[in-house]
Length: 190
Image (cartoon, rainbow, N blue to C red; front, side):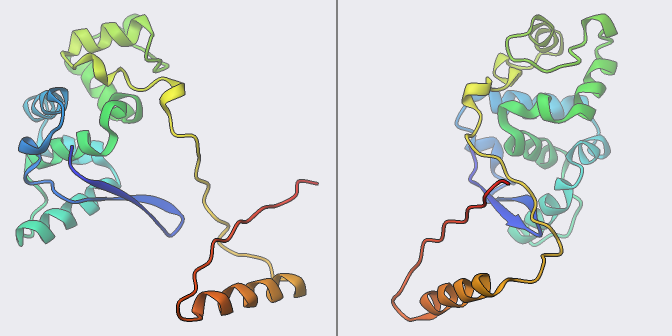
């Protein structure tokens, strides 16, 4: 799989994908290329752009930086980016994509998985009907990351004297050449 780095910017997680244009050769698993090819065959470039949502802008910037061409991305590049960003959780996370597949394959509402549960019969049936590999059922809850990110408040209250003193002490330690610091933040729940 291509290298993806997650970076926090302005309180939201962004992805830095290091190679979109060579993705078709870089997959570590066959199911990834099968899914990217399927997306490329089923949908228009505009639809893939819609499925990417906010992620489309950084995919476009990445393509520009890697290829020196300013384009909105080729259809296959957008399909690969979708698979690279979400991996096996693609269909669980991208509800608009799931809805489009439901419509394209004429899946009855009674057979459509309203809640995406890996072991669910409707999820397995949906994958079979749409031709997506079984890996795209997603991860079980035990496989999910043991952490969760929350956006920081945009306006912080004024620091108390003891907080300002602690902050200045940490800043002094960090800015001293040769020093490093591990900072643990904790709060008490009243």
